[in-house]
Every structure is written in C-alpha cells, then in structure tokens.
Length: 386
Ligand SMILES: Cc1ncc(COP(=O)(O)O)c(C=O)c1O
Image (spheres, rainbow, N blue to C red):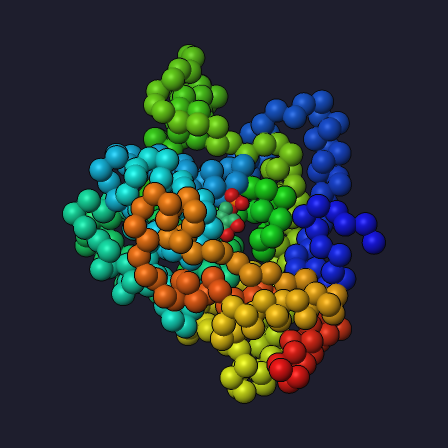
C-alpha cells in the first residue's frame, strides 16, 4: 500500500468525513456563478443559522477556529500587562491567540477525572492583572460552566469558551459556545461538523457587535459600506482577514444539511463504545470518558485513559498492528518547547497525565458497527494478554 503523507495505512481510520450529497451541487453552483469572491449571501444565511441555534447576539464565520480565537483576543483589547488564564491541556492556538497580544499566560490544570478545567483549577490563578479566562470543552464534554460564568462576572473577567470540539454539545440543556462572552467553534476535518477547515466566533452580547464587525473585515467599516450606511469604507481599527471563503461557506452549508444525522450517528457510536468497553473499565484496565450529569456530549471523539504512557503507547502499536488507527492528543502546553524554553513551567499533574495516557480511538460517521466491535475486541484483547 502506498503511504500518503499525513495518512496512515491503517484499515480503520481515526477520522473520516461523511460528505453531504449537496456538496457537489453547491460547489458546482459556485463555479457556475463565475466568481469565488466571498459569498455574502451564504455567509449571512449561515450567520443567521448559528445566531439562532446558539441564541447569540452575532456569529462570525471565520477561516478557522484559530482565527475565531484570535478575533476574540482582539475584541478583548489585551495590553502587554494583561494576563490570560488558559487550559494547559488544549491545542496550541487556544493559547497562542492570546500570546500574540500579551506575554502573560497562566496555565490551568485539568481535573483528575476529565481533561477539562473547572472553577477550582482556574480561580487560584487569578491576579489583579487577569483580563480573560479561556475554558475548553474536551471531547465535547461540558466544563461546569455556571460557577465559572458567575465567578467571571463577579471578577469582571471576560470568558471565552473554546468549543472547537463541542458543536452540538449541551450544558444543562444550553449549547456550548453560547455561555461565555465569546465562544469559538471549529469545522476542521477532524471535528464533528466539518467543511475541511473553518470556524465561527459566537458573540453573546450585542454591545460587541460594532467593533466585531470592523475587526472581522480587516479593521475597516466595509460592512457599513455594503449596507449603505457610509459612502465609502476606511481603516478604523487594527483588525485582520477573518471572513470565511466562498469555498468553505459552500461546503459548510452543504454539511449543515446532514448535521442532525451526523450528530445522531456520533452519539450512537459513543454510547455503543461505553457498552462495549465497560468490562475493561470495570476491571480497572483503563478509564472511559467521565461525563458529568450536566453534560450532553456530541460524540466528537472517543478516548481511553491508560495507567501510564508505556501502556498507552503499546496499546497504540497493538491497534496499529490490527489495522486500527488511534492517536494520543495534546502535549500539555506548559511543557511545550514554545512555552517552557522561555518561561518557568508549573507542575500540572493532571494535564501531564492526560498528555501521557490518553488515547483516541476511531469515532466518525462512516464507522460501521462491525468495525466498532473489532476495535473494542482489539482493545480488550490487548489488556487480557498483558
Ligand atoms: C481545542 C481546540 N481549539 C482550537 C483548535 C483550532 O481549530 P482550527 O483547526 O479550526 O483552527 C483546535 C484544533 O484542533 C482544538 O482542538
């Protein structure tokens, strides 16, 4: 078999996308239109859909979730003295989006039972310089948001939800991404809803809209110009290029047509894994995702947590030998070369444990029940023979 860069030769892949039949029609219509210019009509429809779905004041479709995070950092008007609290166990750009604006990050540890921060891991990090707190909902499983929202309000801090994994997940019935001042979604091909690459910034309160409109459009009041509010547009503030392309928005609109089915399939696979692997968890071979009673997850991805790194890496190799792709996830950011080579690196034992011991196994809309049973059997047989 030929090895494609970035793709493994495993027979059961970690991620696969289910492409909506409407995608072909949407892309053909775009090509037939004779222009690949930003498709403002589709963007307006998508933005209205996300605004309604999340009950937000506004939704800005962006080229990636990273861009949505950077847009939130611009909105926060961080100065070099301001501090930002970010999770240690997350993707690099959850932190880098803010590090472009300030030098002071404080990394919060996760809970022992789940790779997610909560108020007990955030609150001790606050100082008089703290301006923003970022929470990330790992695997679409909600952090305990009510205490965090109330505390941020009380302290006068801006709250950002990195909901990259969490499209379709809920906290006490409310959609994740809609609870903080800002929420960010990812439509990267590894995420529950994908248009290849893409993102969205959700803005909870209308007071942010005027500035967000300007920052989104490269720091200009082009939106006002399009709406006929001003005779010409000009540079107003330091913004950047955050508008989703017409190709991305066509793909996202097509994928949204099958979103309810994608979400249901993911949730079914998730609960099947819980049953198929329960026995191994009961025996203490590994831990399964712990889902608190307030969380309704979206089946973004499934994972196991082994006792240590050696076991995790051996399991990964064993699965690969059986034609099953699996993957670890984040290296804890406070230990990264980028951070630790320049800054003191705190001890954050839970984030470090998840970096060493978490293994993602395939969960995607094209996974069949037979394949899922094969995966669970392979996982259990690895531990039985150990
Ligand atoms: C938690 C988290 N935040 C942000 C991102 C960035 O998303 P994007 O690739 O859409 O920029 C990712 C990507 O994997 C992520 O896992």
